Image 1 (spheres, rainbow, N blue to C red):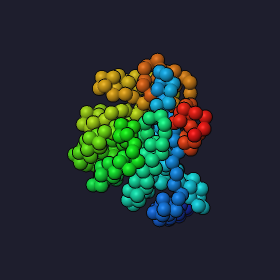
Image 2: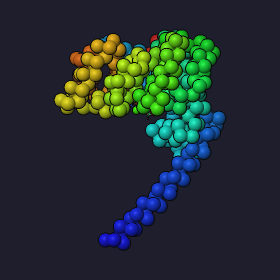
Image 3: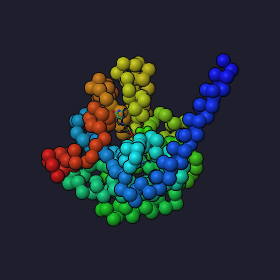
Image 4: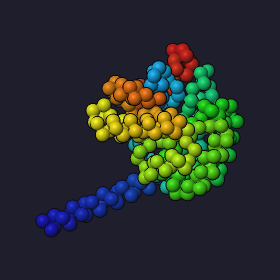
Length: 275
Ligand code: C2E
Ligand code: CA
Ligand code: CA
Ligand code: CA
């Protein structure tokens, strides 16, 4: 049993070695991914729960690696964040999403994910300002999505940045609400305009009484604070029905639309079948 254990350990160690090498390779390849045209954005609709209408889109990043094919952002974003490659990638995402949204005849909102490294970069507010001017996108159409973990490493600095961003006229959404360390106190400390309930709470909301109670209380919290709430990861009619009955404002999920190239949503962005 003992030797077996050691063998298992060695195997594990070897696997770890591969994973570290993998990581280093991805980290290296990420530095050139934008310049080599390997990145693109897909868009996922956000709908008004009451009317069912599309009110905006979240831009989600995709990386097509020349040998590995699609690498998930859940894998490469954390690597990009450690190496600071996220600054270049994040700037590209912001430019591309705003440029795209500015071409839509219908003034729908565009939500962009912003990581901790960007929020704490001294150039970030200036960058957003410049991108808004250059693309001509009306600032109120831009929504920046941040997780609370992006704010807590230096909350004073983060607060200043969020206030400066709001002064530009854009909106701030708290992403993945409920999964962080102290969601409630962060709601009070930072000037959020919207709460996005994490999909882990939305899943099974129609079948699990505990989950339902949590989602109801977040909706009550939003009402009390005057903040609209968007539910993420809505996959079934039953989930959407629950959210409608509880007067959740907005929803996003595979049920209403998977993240896709924007052309697929021309009827919403342009009000016609094709642009
Ligand atoms: P997120 O911001 O919480 O984005 C929502 C994720 O849930 C997306 O995964 C989306 O495809 C997925 N999703 C949407 N609806 C459903 C549903 O009904 N069911 C299920 N199972 N999943 C659904 P994705 O695109 O793989 O992105 C993962 C994460 O990577 C994002 O989580 C975000 O944290 C990060 N990310 C993606 N794009 C960017 C970006 O441009 N910048 C930064 N900093 N992070 C990004
Ligand atoms: Ca998000
Ligand atoms: Ca989220
Ligand atoms: Ca997430």
